[in-house]
Figure 1 (spheres, rainbow, N blue to C red):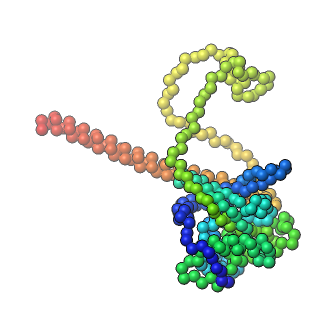
Figure 2 (figure 1 turned 90 degrees about the vertical axis):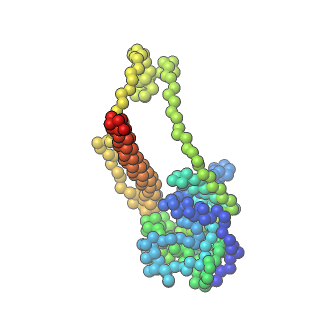
Figure 3 (figure 1 turned 180 degrees about the vertical axis):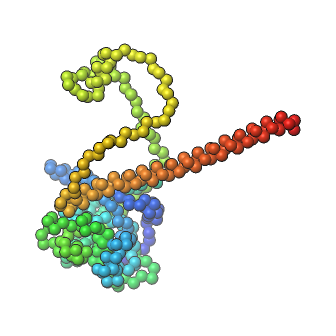
Length: 350
């Protein structure tokens, strides 16, 4: 398949954003579309999605590439195109697609890269590709035309073997079967895409390509910690209720019965260790519905990534503290030797 493109130069911000994303493994972003409430008033709709990189430059994990090698001739498309368009995956059951259609495909995305203390905002339009009917469907044909104009050919590229079907298939090769589809919730009459067809599942997958028109990058130089202030508690401000276990109520009763005592100087010592509960709450099984299970796993994945990030941060700080401690001991020994040498020289009359 031979494609003609109209874009020849990279966006000035692309390389910097790409380098930032490569320094942030497992990055996600928040995307906003325009929806309508019960009174048909336009309202913003936000959700967090996994960013799939720049279209069509997706890098597959080993299992995904193995599946592509088995399912697609030559293991997928040749690397003949690049673009400045970010991508994410979705399916036709999600409201974001209808919201894009009703708002002229308007979209905005935000990356918060905490490790780099940088926020990226991308404004533009987004188009869904992957309709099983191909270019026979008007919306698919229009989306391909818009996306095609934003593609750039790489040097010495042969575009004759590149197809849209392979491009879409590659994006869903990275998905696990449970995240792809559920037999019970499929839309009737929708033929499956190739990966789900091989899994004997009927899918509603789509890939969404975002065409940026405005990009902002904000570097947060300093984050000030929040300060806690303790407000004075007066008897008239708090009323204890009968049988109440509220913490403020107990403070009020203590004020009535106890006299003020002079403050004692706090003793220095080790900080209190966190209290670990002796029994943990029972963890229920995942829902039997595959999509509900995938949604539940997605929530746990967010917590797992946060825990991993915290542990890495702790490890770095711990190693730094160990090095600082060793350096302090070495400096203290050097000071001691200098003082001893001075005393010895003074005593010997040198």
